[in-house]
Image (cartoon, rainbow, N blue to C red; front, side, top):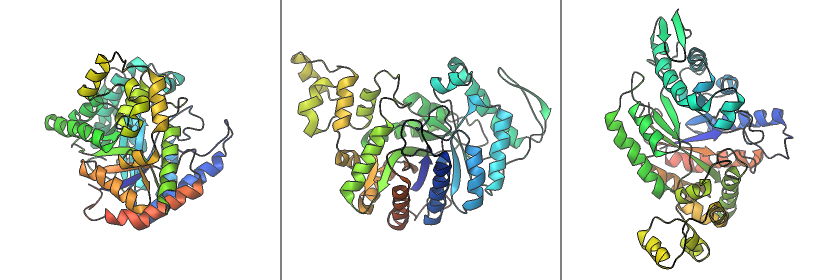
Length: 396
């Protein structure tokens, strides 16, 4: 099992007043410490216009800095939004970072969301075809002495595209996924999954199985298939089990607040979250069970016989999520949180269902820098050593 950190570049803030200089210096310090204590990967998102939620518009700049201050940890695009960039430029930039890091780059891709797309003049209706054409071009660019292309969106006359990556024939490639169709698409194209959703491990197990089964029909867009599942999960490790769990639970619930990009404008978002997080626990059934959709047919039949609606809208689901306690979230693996023993137990739950790496979100607007550093250090000292055996060369 591998352990990584995923960065949105967040920090506590009031309104739009953010000390950007401190944010980036703190982020680099967290990454340097993660390298020193044995984490496997650093992943950075690409977002635009999301003030406060994410200050990571240019991964390459961060990666240039990280190439100078880290030694062993792998550095990942989590992800590069292909419809925003010419594929030739993407291939050049990723290859250059791979050179600077001596072959430690992981290349994740995605399409982003309509809010960010429209802000850059990209028609959301075109992003699927833009992504598909780009993901076909980029591995060919890396493997070609001279490259040329005639496609729907891009035309490239014969050119030598330089530099080439250190990793040959090319770095591993991934797709950001949130639903079953994208899990299957990743498998069919030979891409690893970077799951952008939060799940209870009991729910996630079925999604991982869907991906593994779909790999049987793989037709890689590159020279090989990347068989890998990395899963986003909010995490915090502290000496006080209850306090650490409360911090992580607040962090995640704030991350999925109604004003956040993963929620705003999505119909049924809280119902989907509640289902993904394992549904209404027994101790809340009396308050919320009768209002929410339930997969258990016996419950559904009982509700229908009583004339009770199970689809009462987002208010009930949002209220139920607010009442989900930190211990329930931790015990279900929705968060990796608590003291080192609790965190190790949760990581093991992910390993048991076939996840290759937990990509932990520690730096958020509710967890300040000094606490992030403490969590990273405690993970390194007391959790990571329990999972190092068998890591080999990070799955390469």
